[in-house]
Image 1 (cartoon, helix red, strand yellow):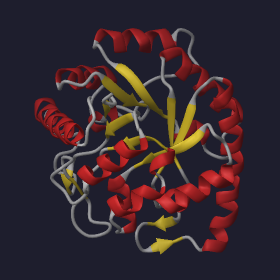
Image 2 (image 1 turned 90 degrees about the horizontal axis):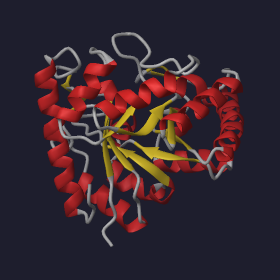
Image 3 (image 1 turned 90 degrees about the vertical axis):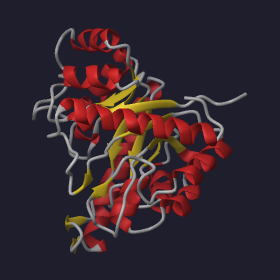
Length: 288
C-alpha cells in the first residue's frame, strides 16, 4: 500500500495578508491542508479564549476546503507561560480538528550567528523547557494529541540534539518536526545526513529549502536550493511515515519574494512549490 502524505501550506507565508485572504490563496494554489497559528497583518489569526472561536475557524476552513494539520503554538507552550494556556490551546486544537501542535525549542543565541549563549547559561533554560514539555505532553496525551518541537538552535539544533531533548522530556506525546532548511541555515550541516538520527521519531516535516553558506538568508522554492529532499523523503518512506509535510518559507535571497509580494505572485510561488513537492514525494513512493 502506498502511504499518503498530507502536503500542507503554512499560512505564515502570507503574513502580510489577512488570515482569510491567505486561506483563499492557499486553496487556489491547490492545497487541501493548512498549518497556521502565527500572526497575519501583525494580529493573531485567532483568539482561542473567545466563545465560538473554534466554530468560526472550522467554518472558515470549510469555506476554502482546507483541513488543518498543525497548529503553531510556541506562544502558549513555552516555559513561563501558565499551563492553563497550554490546556486551552490543546482544547482549541481538538475542537478544530488539529492533531499536532508545533513549537520551537530553546534559543541558544543572544544574536545569531555571532553571540551564542554560554552552555552554563543554557543548562537551566533547557531543563525548564524539558520540565514544561513533560507536563504539556501529559496534557496532550489526555486528549489524544501530539506536540512537536522543531529545529531552531538550542535544544532542537540538530537531529541528535532533538533526540536527546525528547529522551529528557520522556513523553510519547512529544515528538519531532524536522526542518531541514533551519538545520542548514543555523548549523551549516547537511540535513539529509543529519535526519536519519530522528526520522523514526518525526511526526511532521517542514519542506524548507536553503541555499548558500550558514546564516545566509536564502530560502528558495523547495527543490531549487541545496537541501536533498529526495534523499530525505526516501528516509521518511523507510520509516513508514504518513504525517504532514508543510511548506513554510520560500522568500528567496534576502527575503525578496516574501509576504510583501503581490498576492498573485506569492500564490504562483506557493503553487509551484506544491507541484515540485508532489513530484518529489511521488518519486519517493508517496501519494499526496
